Image (cartoon, rainbow, N blue to C red; front, side):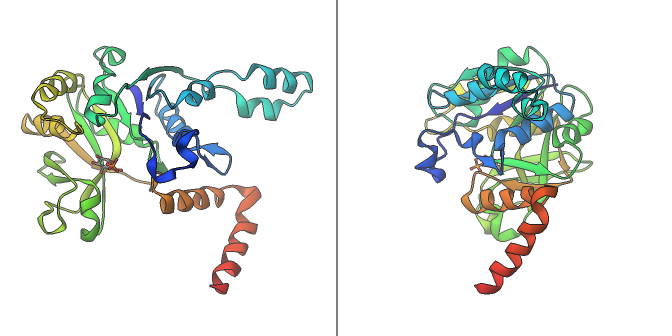
Length: 281
Ligand code: G1P
């Protein structure tokens, strides 16, 4: 399985900061948000990664390259620990640009050549899952063969179903259908998909056909998943771990605190500070 991260989006919720800094590089303390997904992929055994970017995201290319000058300084000074922090991630990373922001389906189509007939795990960079077996591996384990799509789902309160792609679950872990952001009173379940999908090679011809028929506006992945579901090739799995939404300002703050609380050098002082700080409100 190969990995794909769709990172072309504007990040409007984080303007003005995202005017020049890709939101995927915003740090949770000292680790860029995208690195959590890259680490998940590496832990799941993925060796090849495609990042779909856009012209405003050049810093992403640099982040995954060597920082020659700093590396030389640290090497000269014997600062091995610092050297390790800036080493490029140990997997083959390539980039492709989405030229117009036309939606998730359009972005994923750009990965067809990279996939080269293999299944891919597609990640939306806003969704980070902490504290469990790597999510990509959890999903891959639910696929029966290379023809299955697998969606990671979590149970959300009914009142929040209008913020997610929601599935109608069938028998034995099969997805009957998926609907993007249904009205709360019409939701088929409270099982919300997050931005992590194992997709089979068959997704690409379906997306191409769907794109031809698409009337305009953003072209989502959802329609193609519904076609796979009709063919009995879409499964879901209720994943383990804590999902954090770093694409949302509150979610980003929460994720930063959650991660900081896992860092031995910060956890205690931060927890103490939060307790006293909250009492003052
Ligand atoms: C996207 C997907 C949606 C999914 C969500 C999870 O929506 O389209 O199906 O539930 O990610 O984060 P977005 O949040 O980008 O609007």
